[in-house]
Image (cartoon, rainbow, N blue to C red; front, side, top):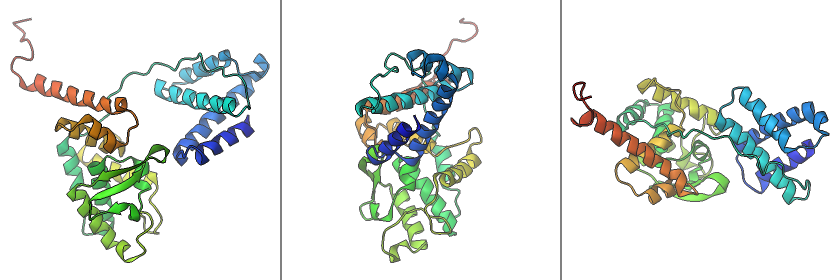
Length: 300
């Protein structure tokens, strides 16, 4: 199985343009299943039957993994066996009749406009580090781009004159995203301060002291630091700014299809979850503000 897994992972990188993070997650999922199969394979004659996979999913659930994680591991195995079938390496696909665990619908977390603006005001823009951090926060909130898209952003794909950036999303899909004036100014200040314009005009936008690109983990720490200062209720991830970007646009009446394009979603149904967030916010405002939204104790 190890040889097949290696070929599959190579295929994901070379032909499917999967990110390093996704490929690493798939490698871990395949390795975990391989360990389970090695332990239980003798019982079923080393044939991966449906029951083997049902037992495996049951083990994962008993181990305390949530349904989303179990579903992701199942999706990895489905993709692996489809690859084996398509390349003539294995004829059967025992996963076809196995349903993924039901996942509770969870609305994406988002921050209020006031909280986001308070965080954007925190970086000390008199220092290079502060200019960099301000540009990171402004860019996330102004564009709604993903963490991987920000880390992979290069100088040649930033057009400050037109106030837009070119990003490459999942599957290397390219899209143009407009920049707000605040984000464009923050980027201009940062790139000017680090002398990026006087060089070849290529290379990563966000770098550390050594001039190397910032890692996703470093960007996560930067965002978490500022968001935690204005809201201590969560261990904030950069994705919350993407969620807030989409929710605030829809709250202000933006067209759902336009928001879909800005976010780089393939399917409109993925974007529609933010309409539920906006609806929940409206209900909350209504319950808190309307004098007839609730029955009084005497009326019950």
